Image (cartoon, rainbow, N blue to C red; front, side, top):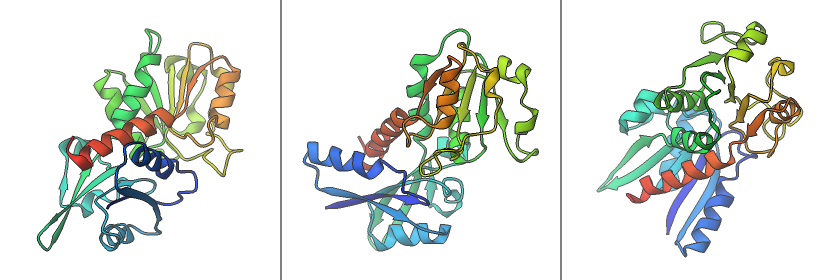
Length: 245
């Protein structure tokens, strides 16, 4: 039996184990996929070794922190600066950890059908590992973007968002965990009243299915999309990496 899992904290919101359990059952694959909630980056590496994992997904807050802990990093993941997939190779007495990023593929393929001529600029809410993957995907699609952050050194601050910013950027992407289960009554601090039917509002969160962020955008007529398709696509891409498909 092969062993896989997702490592991060918190994991109460994650659908990954459910997704892979269904995949394994449908395809009669002898494998399991478990949740490993760990409190510090050094425990991530220990968890991979102790549980003899063949591969794992990395999530909040370790996508950036794990980069320096790996034996090899794929050039795209290195350029992004974040890893969400680790492939584990056991060579004689050595365990070799290889890092990849499939988040950007999941985002790109899930948002592409919704884009039209109005969607020429994007605001990325957050500057963490997910945000970096989204930024890479937007670059591949030739869509300029601006980071929005609580830290003024990393992007424009939320208080600076006004009607002009919102009208110039018809794509708004939430890459923060704000509004994720169980904190479903929270949402990013943006001027929702400035949103219109021309906006495309995307939330990388998928639990709940419709976050407060998306609900407020929908009330203004915006097209909305959650991160569930992104999750499924990146998971399938991870499976290909783990199995060299």
